[in-house]
Amino acid sequence: MTGSFDGVVAGSELPPLARVVRREDVAAYAEVSGDHNPLHRDDDLARSAGFPGIIAHGMFTMGHMVAAVVSWAGEEASVERLSAQLRAPVFMGDQIVAGGRVRSVDAAARTAVVDTWVTVERDGKTEWPIRKGEAVVRFA
Image 1 (cartoon, rainbow, N blue to C red):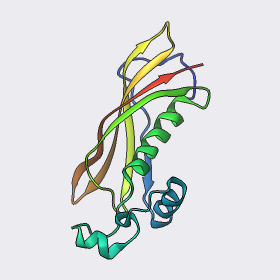
Image 2 (cartoon, rainbow, N blue to C red):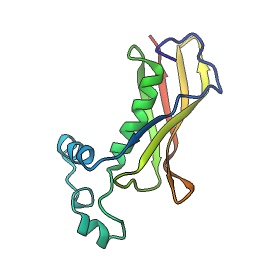
Image 3 (spheres, rainbow, N blue to C red):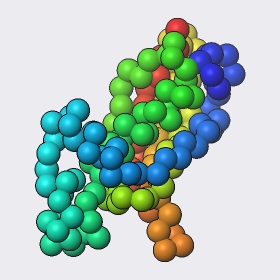
């Protein structure tokens, strides 16, 4: 899928989009967003809260999920609505994978509702930093 409404059908999968979370990316996100919570900047404080080190912002992870939707839909489409449940922390060095599946299509409105998620593999099992996300995409 590369930006055309033709061929969008319920049940089709978005191509997975993978990214390794790096400290520099989380620091840049903190600067741009203004969210300087020490859980995202201070390893000692994050460890005292029970994490192995700093964690990525939930909205950083959600941004990756949106990137997967935009990559699938194309630049001419627009994400009209987005929701997600933030369910698990993301640590530095994690490879997060965003994906989705078209739930429904409205041909007259040229929109698609997409179920979205972000996963990470840890200790041989899949965790869901974002589960039960939803994006409504309008195609030009």
